[in-house]
Amino acid sequence: MDWNDLRYFLAVARTSSLTLASTNLRVSQSTVSRRVIELEESLGMTLFQRHQTGYFLTDEGREVFRQAELVEDSIMALQRSAAGLDSKPTGTVRLATSESLATDLVIPALAPFRGLYPDICLEIITSTATAELDRREADIALRVVRPARGNLKVRRVGHMAYSVYGSRDYLERHPYVEGEPLGGRHFIAWDDSHAHLPAAEWLAREHPGCKIALVTSSLPAQIAAVRAGLGLAVVPDFLTLKDDFIRVIPNDQMFNASVWLVTHADLAGSARVRAVADFLSEQVMRSNPELSGRWMGA
Image (cartoon, rainbow, N blue to C red; front, side):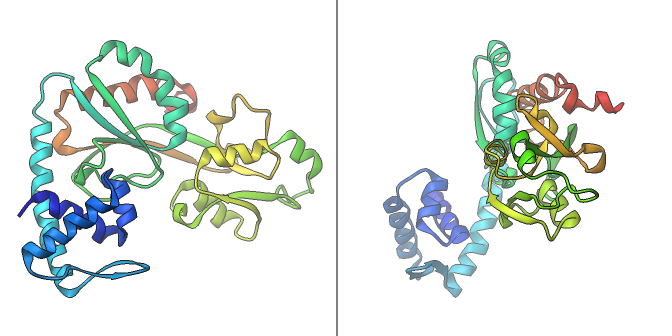
């Protein structure tokens, strides 16, 4: 049995979709379909019920899925152990982080890093979804939500203060109502798949009945919507420095979110992963007073 066939099978089983599986694996749908069929033929059983709405595991498929995950865990552990043995900072490092942290913090600081480590290729995965470090979806992550499971090394490297902002034009068109900072104003909110984010939790807890003008799945889209005068949004303070935004609710009435640097324990000794981790902690976070916590006395 070819391990790659199991890899394709697991991708389809987890997404119930050839399209999503092919996107995640970076191959064509026909390749995914062919490898799944080859696995079914080699095992002599049907693993999926195929419907217009997706691929769904049969009873046999669920048992193969359970066994395949055990195989995957063993292979991933072997790969992590091997990756952690490198003594020179060379090779590819996959960093999972949000789009805003990537574009506004990490990428602008990369030139000096490239000068120090020309043999490291940094691959940035921008998503608010939690990458599975156990499954090598990423080698290292920079997040505002602390992971709750996994054999991980987690380090707090900074924090982000948040405020509610609106554009000057929007606030002039929707003036302040005494005692009601959101009165007569609309909000730009996160979609349901991002309800776990600190900003989404705050809005749901503090202003559950607020009027929603727009729902998005990315912070840059929310900032663009504020800039366009569509409503208010919860935005990290450090991202508003270049915009003519006005605070409607200041950060001392809201919350701070810690920024966590996460690596798998098996990769902690890897020279290339350690180089990226030190870069993120020292150059990206600590060089920004708004993020490092120095201005809060942390």
